Image 1: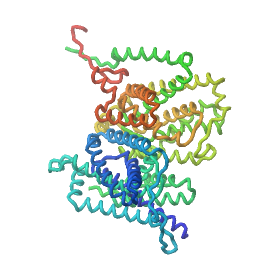
Image 2: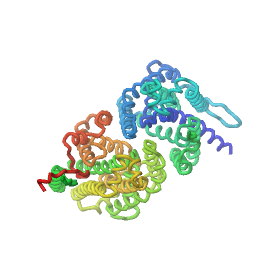
Image 3: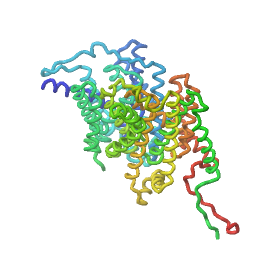
Image 4: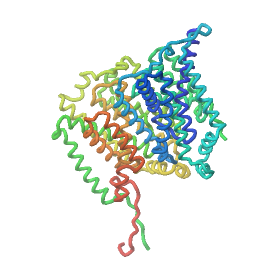
Length: 288
Length: 339
């Protein structure tokens, strides 16, 4: 019994990481209806930027985040203004194919720059530290990851509903043309949304890099996890995305407990079951 | 009074058909004039051409942008191995049966993933492909994660001697490409193809004209899945070895195919043909540069998508009003004095 409780707690905490993968995806879809196929590769790019920063300055990965996050935000803004804004429109094909192309470019650029060898960010003692709670041993790092995920989602939620920037995001999301008429520069607002999304992606990438080893080819898998969390939770609902991440994480750890080869497969099956039973996700945003 | 006549075939399309027929005769004779390596390369080109035509039918006409067609490529490959090794079937029977099984399997899959719209549909197809990959990796009788080879006995059953086998494998690839292009062409010229073209141009208007959009898309998805599995079987009949990572590779069976169609011109029949030729030209030129070539390919695809969304064929067509496959209707206003 206690064994299974442990598995579920681990799954919940893993879900925090998946929610971080998903938050950026959810944010940009919410603001500009863009689905970024390169999202997973951008997570891996952030992990590699973290790796380079820790090696270059000999700093802890958390300190490296201070540099990686702004760099990712700038990449996001430039990417959006330079390329992605041109693809937005009624036709879904251009954004899909352009981000697909970006995914291939990032993946192969990383392969060229860092080779295919698996890498890992070393965070020292925190990687193995744990606390005991009611007979369960819980790792500090997963706990911290989950805490960061909750904080990030709470922060995004607050930003969305209580700040001028969030008002801008909601305005362009509701009606791009009227928002533009009201004096918002939508190209700039989209740029800011992508900058914010990639800053969150930066956090996800660094935490991923500390948790497991990574190589240039694993971006697609991370995109899928994030996407599954978004759909399970319900489109356009940030707290739902956290719940979706948790459900995916729990499904995966339960699968892994039964047979290590089934971890990812069980997660996919959980996603397909949710899709079959509740096509709009478990907590869809109320339609106005 | 002027009497308009409606016609489809043009002089360009007639000439193109004659050239295509001549080219086919030359290509069919390739085992007698081409070397072993060239034969293999051409076989690969035909299989990629088939995949590109099928993906183009889905994405360019039915609006079903899938990034998970590797699911059916890999499924076809694995069915070839499973049905020949355990079922004792002849490889060609096995490949045809794989197509049938893929069609059956694609119906429940469609019921599930058609709930996702647009780009989310795309990632949904990818999830399905991953489920396929992870499932086949669990089947230890087919070698699990490391894969398996086609037993020598089965390979020998195909034809006597290596060159006869390679020739057969080449003809199968050529035949598959002709079959796929002809099938797509005839489908697009039919009543259903007209419905599909209407959906491509405007889903709302097509729906208003009484076209059952869901059903039309389902038909396209099922037919494409079946053909994709058959091509997958042929691909792995050439390779003689299969593993989950190779069979369900998103780069090999989807990324390249998408680049081919986008660069050639999406939503046209000519596009995938031109795209395939350009892709292999690029690949053979840049093959020595390894990953750089993929980088270049990604950049070219993005530039084409942004600057010339109709691809290379779109540029040519707009400039010269050319159409090699007579699909659209043209109207000629006859001068009464002529008639």
